[in-house]
Image 1 (cartoon, one colour):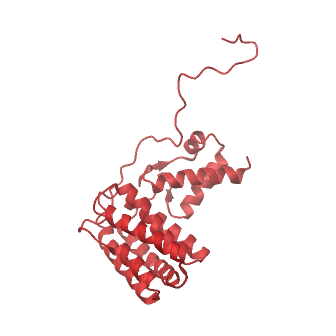
Image 2 (cartoon, rainbow, N blue to C red):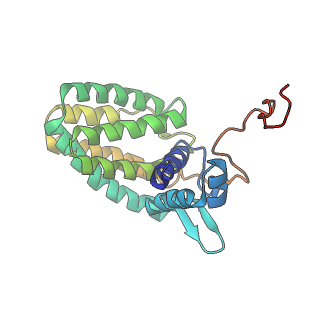
Image 3 (cartoon, helix red, strand yellow):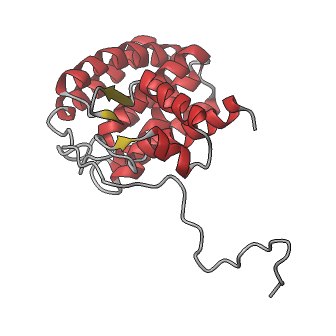
Length: 239
């Protein structure tokens, strides 16, 4: 397989495992280890980690190596400034361009996300939360905006996946209110609903940041069964 294809494969796997919480903030990332686990050479592994660092999911420092980024309170506050700009734009466009099918899908996702916000699997909440907000961006029918929102939401997953409870203040319907506003076809209402949701999320995000607990070892692929029959070699008698 050509180098770029291998690098994309490594990038996709490592990125997915960061976003679903398997590789937590502070986790040390070694190019050599990644290459070994993925059974590839160093260049594709290095290219994949460099791309993740460019996206802000990894950070490299002298003598500290490369690690999964540990968001600081300042990082989170600045992140919400960018996220508000992107997601209000997406919601305003979606109010004008979203189809009935897209709105129905968003409504179902919003109901599920709001339910999981106070009870349920936090990792599942994080996954559906990302899908919901990506769905709004997709309904804007602007590919560049969708890509920007997706990258922004990846940063959100750095801490959201490790929160014990995304919204500790009790039941809320903020995501459903966003869909209701978009469905009204009023771009101003859609933008205001997104701002309300992000203000609530911002208020909780900094105090809920997880403390990093890097693991000493990790694997990207499963171990092969130990009881496999040895490969046949010429000159050996088959058994």
